[in-house]
Amino acid sequence: MKKSGAALALLTPDADGWRLTRAGLSAQKIATHGEAAAALPEGTRLHLALPCQAVLLERMTLPATDRAELAGMVQLQLEKTLPFPIEGVSSDFVVVASGENESTLVSAAAQHSQIETLCRPLRDRDRLPEKITPFPMHIAAACPADETVLAVYPEQGQLVVAICENSRLAWTQVLPTTDAAALRSELPQLLLGAEMEGAPVVFSRVCLAEECAPLAEVFQEFFQVPVEPAAFGGALPEPAVNLVPPSWRDDEKRGARAAHWRQRLIAAGVVYVLAIIAAFAYLAWLKAQARKIDAQYLAAAPVEKYVIAQEARSQALAPAIDPSRYARELLFQINKNRPTEEIHITDFVLQPKQWRIEGEAPSANLAIDFLTKLKDEKELSAFAIDAQPPKLLPNEHAHFTIFGKL
Image 1 (spheres, one colour):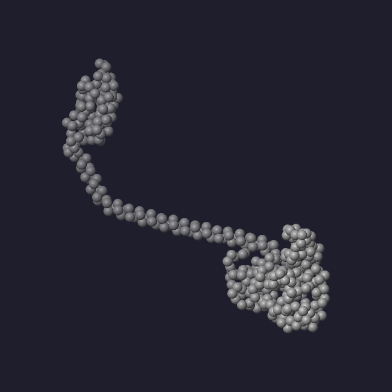
Image 2: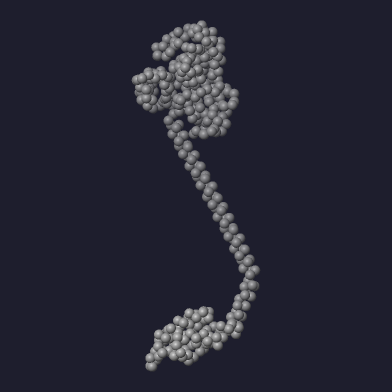
C-alpha cells in the first residue's frame, strides 16, 4: 500500500548482484532480496527494477495513436508471441515515437510466477514493491533528451546494450560476455538486428557505465562518436511503466480496506473506553454530590427542626397575634361583603384554622353572590372559602352555609 510522504527506495540489478538506493544515502550493494528487505526501515516504499533476463522487451510499430487502442493491440500481439498464457503476465509499454496514424513503442512483459519467485523474500518481510519496472527503461530515462544514445552497462555478469531515443528505451540486447574481443565481433550483428527491427543505429554519443570503462576503446573505434562515462549506480529517473501483478493491486486494496476498518475499529474502541471512563467519572461525581447533599442535610437538620417548631408555634399563636384572624375582624369582613342588608347571618363559628357562618338570604342567587364576594375579598385571601349548596326554605328564602379554611 502506498504510504504518502514515506521514504522511497529503489532496488536495481548491479554488475554482480543487486543495488539498493535510498534518498540521501550512498547506494548499497545487496546480494539477495532478503538482505534488501532486512536493510529497509519500517514504512519505506520500495520500487523494484527487473533485470533484462526477467523481462521480455519487444519493439513494435502499430497502426494507432490512442493509448487505449495501443494497449489492446499490444495485448493481442503478446498473445501471439508469448510462449505462456497471457493471463499469467504483467505487461505495459512506452511510446517511443508517434506519427499521424501509427506509433512505435517498446512493450515490456514479465511472468507473474517469475516475479513472485523473485519477490518472495520481500513478501515474507511485508516489503512488496509498489512499482516494478524494467531496469533498461531507468537507464534510458537517465540518458540525454533529444538525442539517440547507445547506453552500455553491466547487469549481473552480463552486458546490456540499450538504444535510447529521446530518453526512452527504443531497443535492447543482452550480451553474455563483457570481453572486449568478443564485443568487437558481436557489435556488427547486434546493430544489424536492431536496424532490422526499425531501431535507429546512428548515435550522437555512447554512455558507458563506469564499470565498463575498459570497453571504451572498442566503442570509440566502432562508432566514431564520443564515449562518455555514465553513473548508472545512483538515483535514476522513474519510467511510467509498471509491471506489478493485478493480484498484488487487489491485495493492496484489500489491505488498505482492512487497515481502514482496523483504524475505525480502534477509534471506536477508544471512544467506547473513553465513554465508559466518562460514565464512571460521572457516577463518581454523582456519588460525591450525594454525599455532599447528605452532609448538608445532616448539618441543616437541627435548623430545620427549629424552623418547623417555630412555624408550628406561630401557627398555634396566629389566632391570638394575627389581627386578620380575630373574630371581630372576620365578622367585619363578612358583614361588609353582604350584597344586601336583607342577608342575615344567624350563626358564626370560629376555630383555630377555620370559620363557618350560616344565614338566610332572600334568594339562592343572592346567597351565591355573597359567596363570590367573600372569595374576592383580599383581606380573606388567606382562607380557602367554599360553601354548601343553598337550601330553599318554605318562604322561598335560601339557607346558606359558608366556611373558610387555612
